[in-house]
Length: 120
Image (cartoon, rainbow, N blue to C red; front, side):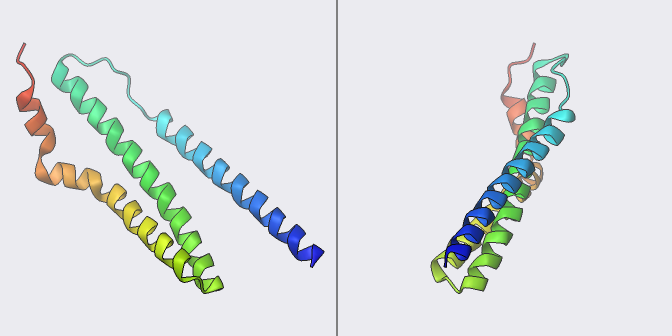
């Protein structure tokens, strides 16, 4: 019994460490490729900011996707219906976050926002 408690506490620590390490590495990769805000016009600045927000959405989506797949595997292992539901919901949210920049491009929303900007 005592050995199981020790194994569970160690598994929680390892899981927490791996989650933090994954988040830190994703943040480092994300901000390593961020362009400088040296835009010639307001429209270029807006397009750069939208590009950064899209990259953040995809990065968060990928992190959430990996985490939710792990949670779903654990839920199936433990046969826990509530955890299966939560993990499935997280998986759908992760896929929506990853696909969101594609929706923005398909609906041409950046061009709509550029049309609302005052011309200089």
